Length: 173
Image (cartoon, rainbow, N blue to C red; front, side):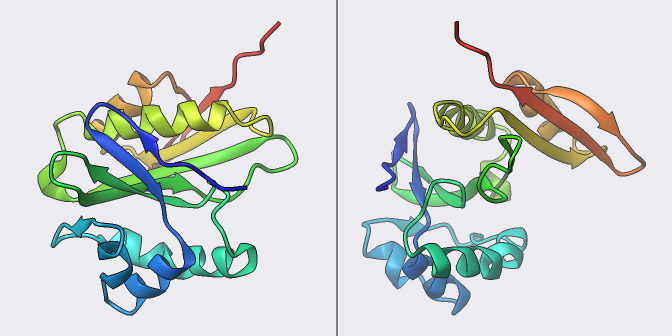
């Protein structure tokens, strides 16, 4: 299955390929630049660098993105990667997926987190295999909490550190 980019008003979400992952792990940006895209100097973030080996392992098996890995968040106005968003794998047997995202610090607070999360949730809801979308954020991450609420997620639990969120896919009749 060939995954298409997702376009919003200001953004393009582009699936991260195996080649791009290899390039980022080695500290390069050549594979991203081949797509006509520049990289913000603060991307990949430390959180993204932590998950690149997991993305690599998944894509090495699959060879091509399924959409349930990571996507680059690219601003249309300057064609620059400013963050990433994606899932922690394909839906499980209950149709549940977990979403996560991160932006470079200088791009936070201007609606890009909401715009990219709304777009990826809409994409996930359009997938037959998805029934529930989950997320978690640190209790003190008020900005993320607001974004998760704004896209329609509901808080389902919290512990000392994290708030757990979920969005149940509407059932069409």
